[in-house]
Image (tube, rainbow, N blue to C red; front, side, top):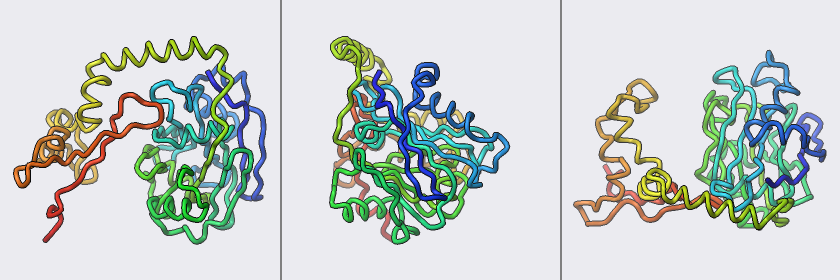
Length: 315
């Protein structure tokens, strides 16, 4: 397992950023980003707190394998008290952001309080500061990421941000990183917006160390990736079709959220299913699917880059 050994504590009310050592005893006892982040949250936050009050905290946590070559090693978790459920929210996301935070030398970020104005946190290895985000407020996550990469003059910076839903208190708003990867459960983006926190931009160049036995780790990683490759789901279904492979199955059993959850089946499901994406179109013989896309260090590659028919949205 690889821990950087440091966490960031950001007081948005005071505008301060402090480094503190990771509680290694907790890291050993509560394995993974979800377990460790939940331990920090329940230890520091009153369970009766209003999720959208400044007293609630929101945590970005990596795990002991984040940033390593273990498959799915790019994931991170956002932990807070959920405005949607009133319980602990542990919303997980892939992409590259989690690995970038670990490679910048940080295991976790804890945000406290509420900023008096929109801000974003910029992390460049050990250099960390809160910056004004008034010009980004009201922008989508796509435009926010584009603007930050341009202003920071760094196309490799990784961004985790909210859009208009999080800013306006939509209770199920997501936190989005790397343009299209989302910590999308339980309204973590809503809590982010309630604190006037627009984004976290991270650039890490340190790499990941502190692996006790690198040779044994790589041997185990290779063995586990072989198991994934031979599995019907992680080695065949997901690489071939992505997570969309479940659409027809879920629709058939009446469990497909449709029309904002008013219905449980969609009559057009087969036309937007994974199978449809890889089937040549009658109009031009081309497929919607362009290529697979993988998150950091992942051999499953369940992400998809697809191209819609140019005439699909014409009236």
